[in-house]
Length: 341
Image 1: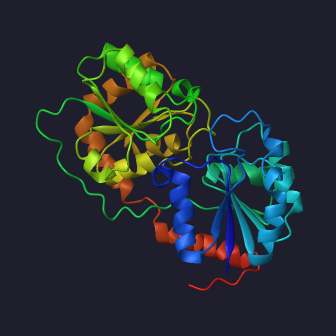
Image 2: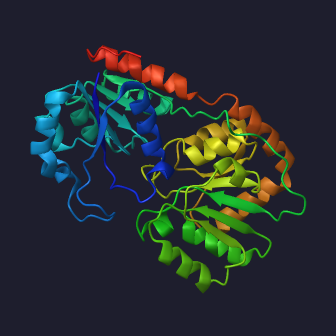
Image 3: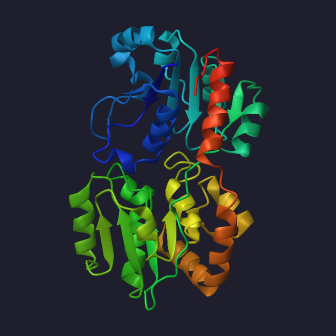
């Protein structure tokens, strides 16, 4: 079989550091296929309305369609891109981040244009079913966590947080909590930060770190790294978002942290927060501001040993990469595509 994978972000300078790219690469490893970018342009922050995305590639898409069996679209939310009307092969559409309560009309229009609408959480599936969408499916993101190990934090290591979801645009310094983390570090002299960057806005983060006098306590890793080694020297991972569509429902950085026995800090808006709260493997942050973060960090440190133990227990229940691929294989088959392993 041959799948054409559609992503709705621009090419990244460090593509292997992006969670969606990692998921698509895993699917390509099993099923084959190529990747196209519906996003117009090569840099984030396009002013072109979303309803036009992909139309600039329509002639190429129609030509590519002769060679593929299936289209698979990845997008943060269920948005009915008009370009989908012109595709003739079956379309599987994966909602990466989640489904807003206010998104009923768009989700229903999208569902009429695709074979299967895939969502990451049971709550999302229930919401779509409540909107009479009967071609929805649940697929939890799966990771290969075999090479992640739980190690003791080096003696004397100051409290250190790892941020893995770097901003794509300047506006996301606020909406992804980067500015709040820097403000928190400025007010907590004992706190250190490790920021995994993706090749974008490198000068901007360096400027903001210098402006707050945090060069000695904020480390920006703008390269591909062994995340397991980085996790070995931090106390927790953090993912923040002002809106549920900014970050994957289950951020890879948080799942990897749990596999390494590191608890997590996660915004209430991110769907994984419900799991973190239930499993008590981290702390849910109620706001994107330094005050909310400080309260969450203090709560984490007050019972750090307990949170760390529960993090490992939660990691044991993380969906596997094989399970995710098998679930998509069944969806592809239901779309009438023969899947050969």
